[in-house]
Image 1 (spheres, rainbow, N blue to C red):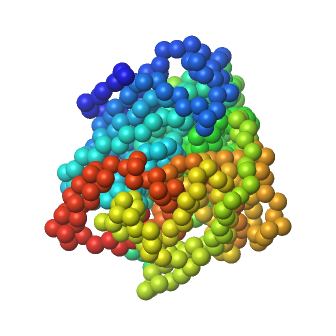
Image 2: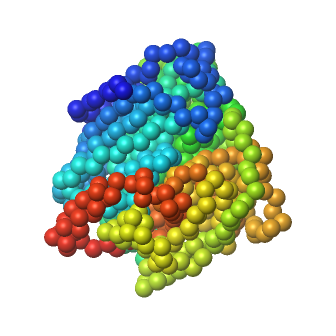
Length: 563
């Protein structure tokens, strides 16, 4: 096996500290494999494989290891010109992108240097299936204890999928303090393009930290945030700088969008330009064209934009528009970047596309390129989402249970201790049988939409609508959309399915940060009898011992759901 190693990742961007924010794609420190195909006119090819290769049945193995070192630190930043404290990965927000090729093994060493805030941490590799590597999923109280300040943890996983995703902390609200970054796994694509511009993060932002806002959120409801950022930068009251990117006329560009917001559903567009959508989450899809793209929290879309508007104007607005039907933002009309055709960035005079404010999903447009049929359900469950005021704080529930799990007693450790009778508020659904289909209907009577994210699997979206769910609802079993994050519509239902093909303890939760912290989650203990055999019990025990010692010494209390 060959291995690439990197002792330190360079500081590629420290957003908010520079006078301008031109977009220069990060240097890929691990250039993609030198093999046939995947040129600008053959993006469907990839070495000995192609877009027609099903990565669910073919495990590509390059024999190559890509190794990264990430350090989490407390920082002061001004991404929109307004200074505040935050947390960064290798000194930048968002953190550096992790690059790999389809079939590589990825090793990431994470050092927790959050010694000012005294925060624990974990890093979750969002959308990575962690096939038979459950202990590397990076979720406190579920697969690990928090990693204490001063400790280093190594995560290892196989890039069995390809496309665009992200990593983020899964400790309290830390992801929205800045602990997040992109993941690009090179592979084939369903349409051709000339240049890859890499990750484009859409996020909301406030001049108070999410930790400072937490008490208000759980007692009064979600706060209205001050503004938002595109790739970690924006303007606010004539301070700061805008994200911008240069286009060359006639060139087509791939952009990898991720919604990393704590509580904002975006509509994304580039004035006068049409986007060709080629992937949703980590699933290649039949390409479709749109001028406005809905993107919920935790979702990703790969788009291709052709630079064909030079005759119209020199500069165009890029727009990330928060949807008031989901949540409010005080700067909703000015979360914008700029496309320039001349290299000289001026304020655009272009007009945005018309749209209806909504929290829609793109489900109706999503046709997976590799066609699959959903099998008959052997196991099913219905969960009703609601909210309750408990001891004067809001807690979200599924079937009247709000998840409350313990940092110091993760579910994976309980499985290793042969616990089979879990506490009610552990919110466990046990799936003991291998390779059977599980159907789950999530419903809500409340006029609040939720982005539902599942760890360890891509799920199939069988039904999704506003209204009442019943057995009369027609389920789409013939190549339905599949992904890892989909919207539960307000006053409606989401029906998903997945196959029990991945032993482990897997979290499913709303990806609104406030709701996760308020217990909107459940977990699947999948194929219990196989979990101990694929788990490093020493790693788990040592990390939990280090955290317990730290938590006791610093007198740190857990004041949220534990995830």
